[in-house]
Every structure is written in structure tokens, then in C-alpha cells.
Image 1 (tube, rainbow, N blue to C red):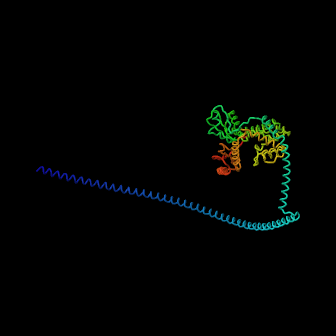
Image 2 (cartoon, rainbow, N blue to C red):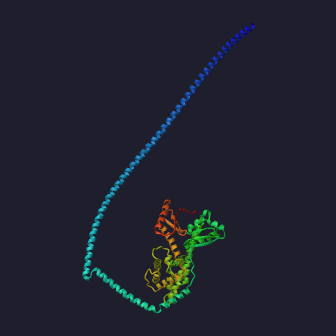
Image 3 (tube, one colour):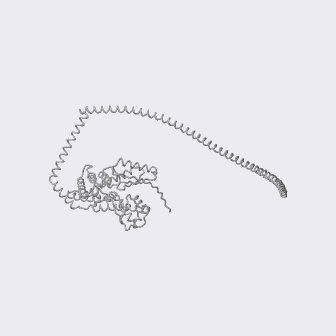
Length: 520
């Protein structure tokens, strides 16, 4: 019983505690709910304020963007408007120009029609005049035929027959006299003279080639000659027109070129550069120019010495230079100066044996090939050209005839002429004296250079690599960079059309611009 009472009391206490706790809890919940509502309202008010601020900022940005777009649009519209106005102005100007051109064309057409009418009138008048002239000529011919009782053809045939008979009679009589006189002494005397002259003038002939060797002390000097990236070699080749070959050959540099004068200039220039030690492009150009002047002086000295040795005096200075230039010229691999000296001696001996003037014969023999070394270019054969040069410098007519007739281009009118011809044949006919292959090779190289020099704007031209390369230096003031490529193509096409050669030829056009000023 007591237990039940205690239990009931306990249950009542628990219910009262639950009720009290529930009452307290409900009060706390209501309090927290009111606080939460207040916080929510505060957050809503702050959010509304912030949203209003953001709205205002976005509206301002939108207005600024709108104004910016509006300004850009107006500027673009104004620009396009200006372009349209400019185009309209250009179109108007072009229309005016076209109208002016049309007027000019119309005026020129009118003038052309007038000229056509004038030409037609002149042609008609000319035709009438030619008809009148032909009538007068025919009447004149008929009048002459009546007076002579011969037609034109009959008169022409009669004149030709008379000239033929007279020429044949004179020629036959002259030939008969010469033959009768020559039969007596020709064979014996000719053999005697030829044997004597050959015995007295047997001289060694130096075979000309196209290669010179420059010896150096060490390979270190070879490196200085080559220069950085080969610039010294290129500068020397451009200045002299020869090819410098630097290979594994110890203590030697090969100078290759078909022109002996250029090879000699290159050899002497290398010698002076190595002795000086200053080897660079500017110095190379200076030394080459000085060496070229020295070679010209040497040519004049050789000419004077040759004339003194042969006893030929009173030559014009230009002829003396031509004689000296023969030292650097070959004819079928035979040195031209040695050949001319030999011919001069032979001519002097033959003239003395035949009772003619030996000094004049020597003079003619020495000058018989000057046409090969003349500085002026000509399409004439060297004998005719040499005769013209001799006439120019007031040589004796017999000497001029001997020069021009030694290859039978003209008729011989002097007794010295056949002597020069015979001595030229004697000098060139000995075994080993000449080699035609070398001459044809040199002629091809000269033709190559002459062909390139015929184009406008080409200042210098060098045939190199045994004629397989053609280096052309053009004037920078006359030839632009674009035209240089076209020039190389035009030259290559002309070479293909006009020349015969083995393999292929490389055409290189070099355009260089130099500006020089001196500070004083």
C-alpha cells in the first residue's frame, strides 16, 4: 500500500515537473521566435537597402555604357560619312579626268584623220611624179639607143667583153714575165733564204697556260689571305677578275684566269699584300689599283725596249703600248710578242737578201698583229683592223698594206707584203708553236664577256671557272635589285641562243652600292 502511495506521489511529481518544464520551455521558444523575427526583419531591411544601392550602381553603369556606345556610334558614322564624301570627290575628279582624256582622244583622232588625208594626198602626188620620172627615163634611154644604134643590154655586154679581154691580156703578160723570171732563181734562192733565216732565228717558245702559282711561306699566311669567311679572296677576285684557288696544296695558292695580264696583276698584288702584312678588302682594292698602273708602265717599257732591240724607231706612243701589250697576249698558245719579234727578224733577213729595205720590213713584221691587241673593239678581222690602226697613226702605206694583206684579206701592193706573210707562216708553222684548242677556249671566254658587256648597266664582267661561271658587276645607279634578277635571266637566255658551250654556265649578277666621303 505504501508502495502504491509512493508511486502515485512520484507520478504526480513527475507530471508537475513536466508541466513546469513545458511552461518554461514554451516561454523560451516564444522569446527566441520573437528575436528571430526581429533578426529576419533586420536582414530584410539591410538586403533591401543593399539591393537598392546595387540597383542604382547598375543603372549608372548602364547609362555610362549607353553614352559610350552612342559616342562610338556617332564617331563611326561621322568617319564613314567622311569616307563617302572623299570617295564621291574622287569619283567626281576621275569623271572630270576621263572627260578630259576623252576630249584629248577625240582631238587626236581628228588630227590623225587630217594627217591620213595629207599622207594620202602626198602618196598620190608621189605616185604621179614617179610615173613621170619613169617616162622621162625611158624616153632618155630610147634616145640614147637611137644615137648609139645599141640596146642597153648589148652595150653592157660589149663593155664587159672589152674589159675582160683587156684584163686577161694584161694579166697573162704579167704572169708570163714573173714566171719566166722566177724559174731561173726562185727555187734555189727561196730554199737558201728560208734555211738561213730558220738557222739564225731558232728561239725557244714559252707555252702560255691559264694558271699561275703563288708560293707562300706558311699556312698561317694562307689563312690571312683567305680572311674571315673568305672575304679577302672574294675582294681580290672581284678586283682582278681571276679565280683564287686555295686547296690542300702546301705553301701554294693557285691563280686561275685566261687573261695573263689579270693573272700577273693578281700575283703581284698578292706578293705586295703578303710583304706588307695588311690584308683586308680596302687595302686589296688599293694595291690592285696601284699594281694595274705599274703593269701599264711595264707594258710601255716593254714596247720601248722591243723597238730599240729591233732598231724600229719613230713609232707612235700608242703603237709602242700595243707592242708592249703583246707580252700578255697569246695566239694559239704562242706568245704574241715573241712571235712578232721573230717575224720582224725574219722579215729583216729576207728583205736584206732580196735587196729591199730591211728596216721597213722589220717594222711591218713587228706591227703585223697589232690588230689582236688594239684597245678599241671592232668586228673587222685583226689584219684589217691592224691596218686601220696603222693608218690612224700615220704609218707608211707599204707597211699598212703588209699588215692588212698578211692573211689575204686585201690585195698585196707592196713587195714587203708577201715577205710578212711568208715570215708569219714560218713562225707559226713550227711543231709545237701553236695550239688551236687554247685559242678557241680563250675566244669563247672573250665572247662571253663581250656578250654580257653589251647589256645596259653592266660595268664589269669576268668569265671564271673555266668559262662555267660569268660574274657580272652592274652599276647600282642604273640597275635596281628587281632588275638585277631579270638581267641575269636575259643574259642566260642570250647565251643559250647565240653561243655553243659544254655543260652549263652560271650567271651571277652583283649589285653593290658605295658611298665615299672624305673628312678634311
